[in-house]
Image (cartoon, rainbow, N blue to C red):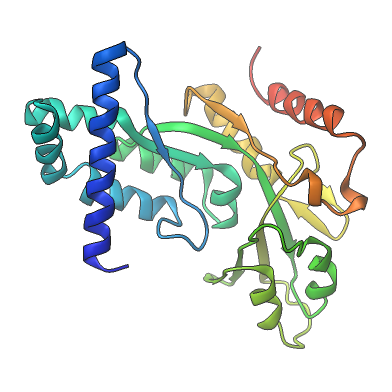
Length: 256
């Protein structure tokens, strides 16, 4: 993404913050926009998001522009940007990027980026990837949603925009113990073991434990939207009880 595009994005975010300032003045209601990093997007990792907030959205130029739009002082505008522009931390996305929950939360806090929404979700994890991964994961290639894949081999990460792209790169290599795939495919939070796969449930558990000790966000949202395309073997019954079971699982991770 070139500099002009980044400048245009920044301007639009600042204009939106000005709109939210106006709403707060008129109604007394505070609204924050939650910007969500996602694999294969412009903001993909927490590190990239922190840099974008630091270098653009929270920069003095952005505060000056918001002051111009709202009549706030530069200091007040800087505070307003941090109030009205925050991050949506999707736990599936962060896990797929092989992030560490504690380091992720610490970096956001250090940068003063508010987590305005914590999306509680888990993805697919396949360890020991080899040529058989295509057959194992084919049922998840639903053609409805984009399922980005991040491969870790040793310390190197390789990213694929969708399962089909990862399949094409597989070749005929045998399974390698140091080769792991994580797939942006939301699976039920209460399922840690999915036969030949596991989920990134452990990442979710650790993040919720951090939240229980020191709240990460005032807004938690359970976001499994793939119920309609889950392979039959992973469906646990009718949809309402499955959703209730997922919510109950999250409540069990948090103090009463």
